[in-house]
Length: 103
Image (cartoon, rainbow, N blue to C red; front, side, top):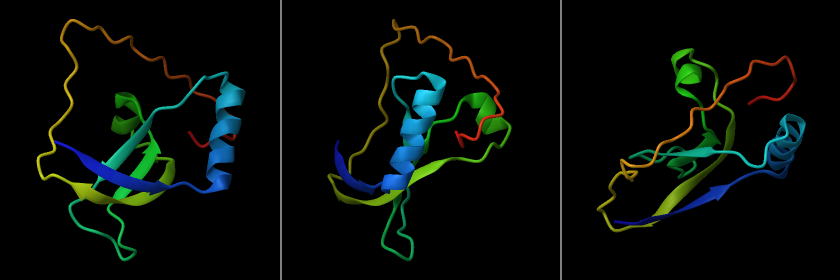
């Protein structure tokens, strides 16, 4: 039940992320990794983007991609992570803003 992936993130993308976090007063950011069954023309099958809320996904808001990569090892038995039912997750408040931050 494991895999290892390699993701490449450009320096200018990292700088954009840090600038956005500082501007919003955030301490960190949630990144979603998407792994495909087939590789693209560059031999990549993993993409990384800033995580979106359910509302953002339903509104078809564009994703802010931060990097691409590839799975280079897995044991063929990947399963979904499950949170314990007794933990309650706080709802995130999504604020609309007119700033130039892409996420």
